[in-house]
Amino acid sequence: MRYDVTTGPIDPRELEVAVAHPGAGAICTFTGIVRDNSRGQTVTHLDYEAYAEMAVPQMRHIGQEIKDRWPGARVAMAHRTGKLEVGEVSVVVCVSAPHREEAIAACKWGIDTLKESVPIWKKEHAADGTYWIEGDTAKPAS
Amino acid sequence: MAVAIAVRVRLFARLREQAGLETEALEVAPGSTLADVYESLRRKHSALEPDRDSVRGAINQEFSDWDATVSQGDEVAFIPPVSGGC
Image (cartoon, rainbow over all chains, first blue to last red; front, side, top):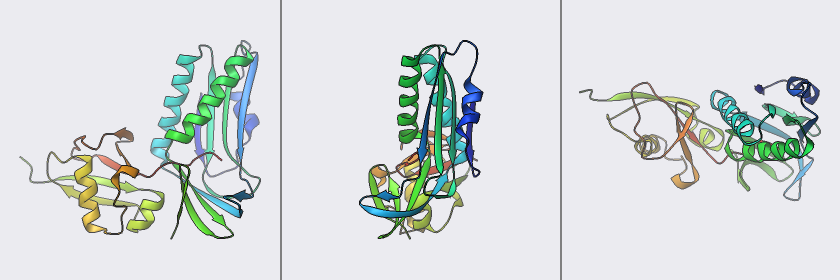
């Protein structure tokens, strides 16, 4: 199992290799990409900030829960921090399982839960200003 | 009994910008809760978010309730709503 918070580029293929094994007939990979728009505004770039000492253990909790809920699953997750340009990979959640149903369901649950509970924040630099994104809310940044 | 205990406070994202610092060594009374630590911090940094309901606390990298008691040497973090992913 592999859980990373990193300032460097993330290669989804490396996570797929980390979860692959002969008993896994399916690998589902979610790749999050920096989008060029948000709230109807043009986004120039993002800054991600993490509480890394807590984010990695939180990812490990999620991975453990996936293994409990979907026996046989293997999990890898990585989130990037620092300045990211449009089109760059911000997050990858990768799950292998014996069959596709478990792999897809576990991967979806993994990214949804990561977005709720892993202490990482996005600062959006957009045409109308700079905002901290907090859940579904954008709050002006200093 | 100790007169005060020392905790290390960490702030992130919007809270970090409001307070103008990432980390602070804070002395609080023995038996203080996470809520007490936050209010103590707010007395020093008045720009810090007044609505505690929008913030979560963590002790030693684990989410904790506001009425959880802190101990000498704990790392206490205040966490605004998270927004990882894309």
